[in-house]
Amino acid sequence: MSYEPPAALTLARVLRPWGRRGGVAAEILTDFPERLGSLRQVWLADSRSARRDAAVVSCRLHNGQAVFLFAGITSIDDAEKLRGLEIQVPLSERASLPSGRYYISELVGCAVWEEGAAAALGMVRKVQPLAETGDAPESWVLAVETTQGGELLIPLAAEICTEIDPVARRITARLPEGLRELNR
Image (cartoon, rainbow, N blue to C red):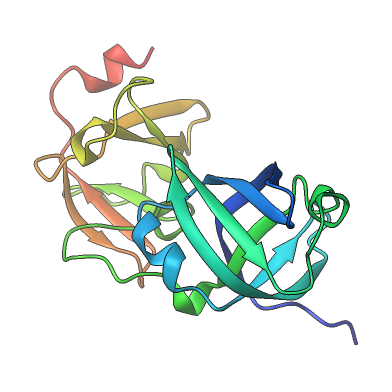
């Protein structure tokens, strides 16, 4: 029987040492950076999903990055060993979202059904911004792997995705005329 670590949410990634006392600068990977300052216990994880507990002494935001100080990390050499590690918390500790907002992880894997259809169009493979600069919810699209093979990009807009039920793993969509043709 093998141990399966609890699901984790990555909040930041260590970029480099910061200062001379063991601090690290980290890329912020959360939509809620204000909560980083209240963290007291996190996991530091590498690309192989190996994790270790780390106590957060402090965290502050500086020039679009987070500057962390961890217990026991007291030198540049110690901090250098953290380069590239992800700063994670258990998935159960993620911030709650307002009604009508969803985490990408909740949407990926959902079946997409067109209103009134007898079969699913396909499965959400990923959620991506419509354009590199897009960050509003209306500028995101669902990349749906269709049952006929091929990809269909569906805007993640309330007028199109009329029902989203992450618990049932189902999205109901009202596809605008011409959407399928645009995707060819």
